[in-house]
Amino acid sequence: MQQLHPKVDDFFDKLTKWQDELAALRSIILECDLVEDFKWKVPCYTHNNKNIVLMHGFKEYCAIAFFKGALLQDIAGVLIQQTENVQNARQIRFSSTQEIKKMKSLMKAYIFEAIAIENIGVKVESKKVEELIWPAELLKYFAKDKAFQQAFAALSPGRQRGYHLFFTSAKQSKTITTRIESSISRILKGKGLTDCICGLSKRMPNCDGSHKLLHDFKK
Image 1 (cartoon, one colour):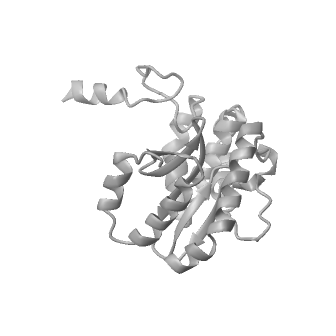
Image 2: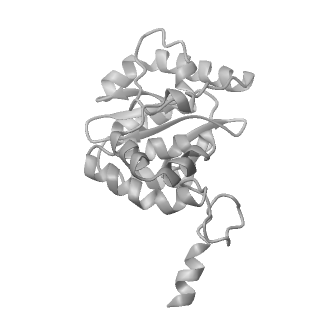
Image 3: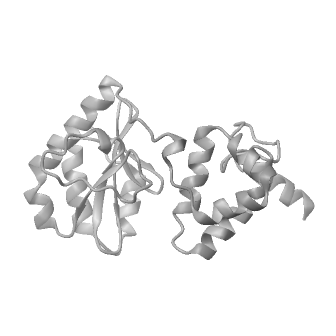
């Protein structure tokens, strides 16, 4: 029997919804020789230290999400792209334990296919920056500030995609504008959303939270 992760046990103890459904999913996933872990505050399952699938609950459904779901054949047509900005991951959604039990064999087939894809080393081909649709709010800022536009264009494709997801995941124009305004100084410095701007990070160029030392020092 696979070893259960204590943090996942704690996760279940605190659940107020979907407890039976997620427990059923956990049982099925562990039958597929995956290692249980706890990442991004949800149960995550790996093979040879590679992320394969995780599970989580939402207001109207619970789900398992395949990290490279876009590469699965999806013979049953059950995979769901959570939003148009999600390129790799795909969900299978459930609303009852009966539904989960009925799909057990299918789920295991998908999981074993996901493991095979990871073992082969196949990668999802990301959309090119030129193919992304930029929000009108950002285009307006570009028209007003050419220096800002040039700084954004000079960012690496990965950093541009990160900002694209950050901006377009907002549902209201006001929120998009607020997010753009909060990012301008970072972009002018050539920094991505998760890049260090204080110079203290030990994980450069990524931020590791060391800027909090500055805040504590100033107190």
